Image 1 (cartoon, rainbow, N blue to C red):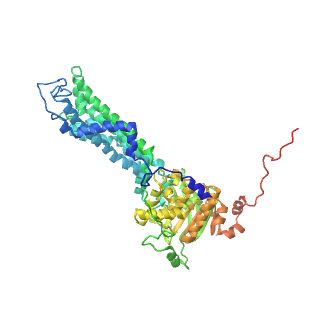
Image 2: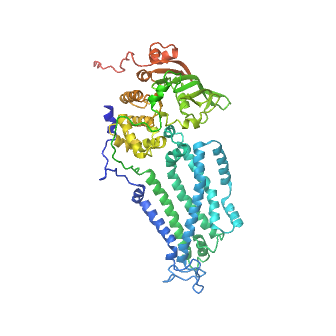
Image 3: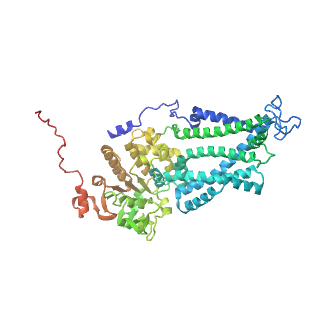
Length: 614
């Protein structure tokens, strides 16, 4: 029943073309459909074409002067007239577009090249780089821009290129602050942690998941910066600080202002060109933003694939799980071993507040360990220590963690060794999060988010990864895997999203799966299906599972052993049968007593019998 309900969430018909591809507008099509986008493209495209073909369209060279024809009105030869030196206004307007537009692009390019990567690194990694970057940015922003440009002009001469490079450096802090703020707002999102656990590198996460969030404001900022660069460059030349031998709109403005009472049109034409260009840039920035963020997402083309076999074939070059388990049989070797683990957070007074204290347990292959306790008992912090997803300010204050005999946290280390864990996450350790909808990136299809980790971690082709993804979606009970594969996260239900995350967790054949309350956000019927699915996968794939939960009912239904935590400490551990039947600790007894099973229902607040009318 639950499967049919979940499938209905995404089974609505979608228009398709003859090839079966879902009809989706591309960014360019959405841009063209937007009247603001059409207007900006027409304006900027026309100006760009005039600048490119200036040598062909201009009847004269930019500095060609006819001294017998100064300040002449428009005629068949000089269609816009001439200036005070007898130079053709139309020709200078065309050649001026080249230099003006290129200088604006140079300024924006320098600002982006400095501010964007610095903002991405500072926002994602923080730490010393962010502190140093903020210091440099504060210095740059405190400099008076016009005075700096005048100084550079005096030192290097009237070069528009050097001036625009300097202005790009001065304006780069705007990109830095915009990018850093946007990255900080999403770097701790659950889908970023999920991508990290899937085995993606930091640069892949930044490029795929982080950059998609900041691209819209960056586009708008670039349009604004290009417009400001045109205004600044033209303003400097209007003041006579440019190179008089080069035709630019700023030089033409200065020339027109000097003769405004004699020939007003000399001032009008460059001013009109500047207004149209800056206005077109602003319109284009907003139109592209709308096309990227508000339109429909581009669909990946679906290819027909035949699903073969009942289980995904193991990746080449990796030993089978059963073979590894056979080697380990009869030894004291554990898949995961946590010894006297302590996790703390520094406080303002210099002390360290422990949230996990002296916790020890182990997990073997083919075993499910449940870590149970009330909210704030430290169970999730323990799981995050194994995953290496603790916050930056967290400290390992004691103990060690071993995975398959190798330390991920060695005795005496204060932090999880990310270099060691980065080789394990997504390959041998995977994660099923608590909130399914928050752990899927809304900017990408479900299929893309399943295929990408397999391509990167297992080294298989996209087509092979696609076949495996469809098979996994079938294995986790999704009736229409093709439809779900092509869907975006907002197009599926919560139960189906949880199944997708389970499929992603086992996609790269891990040895250990850490499930952090995987059924909390689901209704009762879907909870039962998810628990049955986890049990079936554990038995079939012989994987070890650490299940973090506060529900003893889930522990009784699924786990082999259970560890009870209170206030960061492990108060009791043993087999599920022993703990449930004969709990030794008062806290465990209290948790068991809080369950609803076996309780007498309370009487109804409102009686079902009608009171007699007096």
